[in-house]
Image: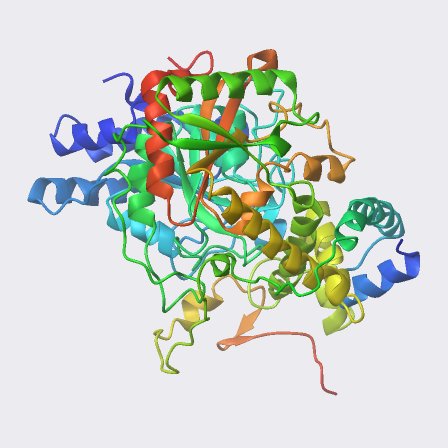
Length: 99
Length: 487
């Protein structure tokens, strides 16, 4: 299989990446080059195999924990916002989204 | 003492405990060595912060409250967030970012007494095998400055090899501790997935990322690993609820009767003869030490490349969606609306490899492709993990090369990302299985560049790996060799 320039444009939009035309072209060639080595993976018979998310699940049952829904962190608004590009009165500023 | 920069973590800890040297003296010596940023290994240094930590360590050494590694310097890979140093993960999108907290690994090593020297260069978001994907320039290999140090923990490996730090932290997603350790002639270990907390480790591929130490010897790695591993169940959902362990306790056990599995797939035609010769030499040393070599098979070794390069980008595309120019880091200057701001910010902030992996990941997770790619890769991942469990019925540890070749020239693979991917073949299987793995200096190959031996253990068998590595280092001196000009 091979991706088309339209696929690249569609994924770039999904991934919120603006690509220059020459970047899209290079991306198309390189991603298609990579999918050349993916073909081997698709030929593998995996019927009846459970997908593995936590590797230690290979030897023991792993259940992801949930912690109690209680406040665990102190309020550090200033520290949390000190690296933000635009802040006003303790709020993150973004371009207007509602007219 | 003129050779402080050549001393081991263990030796430094002893000198500090017996008051033969102060933490401030040690920190000052290492800070002086980092002046001019040799090899472009560091991304942030702040001598005031380092010296303040050193003074605090000296106070603890004086009043008897010192931790086991009190006053010994360490430098952190820039994917660990730090309150007192900038954190960029090697990316422009995080330029100037200051975290409100320290990563658990950083905090645990500080609790053990270690003094932070600064932050180390790495591939952007730990994506790379040569440290050429850093937005802040490549790192040079101290053994030959025209060559790469490996990646993604390239700054960590170069700093230790060049005597800029006695030890460093690294992270390993697909080989990022083991491969640069091999390329720079140092020792590094990635523990079992879930042993070290991922809290405050900027996520690349969450189901694979693991922290670990890089130092000159297995003995030093054991000291750091004992301090940095431990349950962090409230802050890392995949942290294993296991007690801490003293990985130094069994370093001196005999290897008599140890069964070392030799996977035939690791010794095929892709392996360069110079690397093979060094690896074979180390294996002969093991036989002399009483170990027995057992032929085994890891039949899906080659498949680990596509499986890894589907799973890791898929998780990366999701993890990197948080970099949108709103809450931290870079924001584009000119944009028309919110979506345009996201797109331009991310276009300007991410480098080529990060963009490629975001695109690949978004594609394989997109509607209609998820089952064929991500789910299929996760199923083969289980088969790869099962292959290891079968192999461990016949052997105690597995040994082979870390990488097919020695460090290549800077710029050599610049236009061919797949060439870099293929070079990860021997480290990816253990990463996918979540097994502990390490690189131990095994000799020198072409152009007199270091070669590492990879040791892979079963889950939670880090102590056994470190024992095997330490015994090899008692019989050989490759780990004590240093690049020219270091004395």
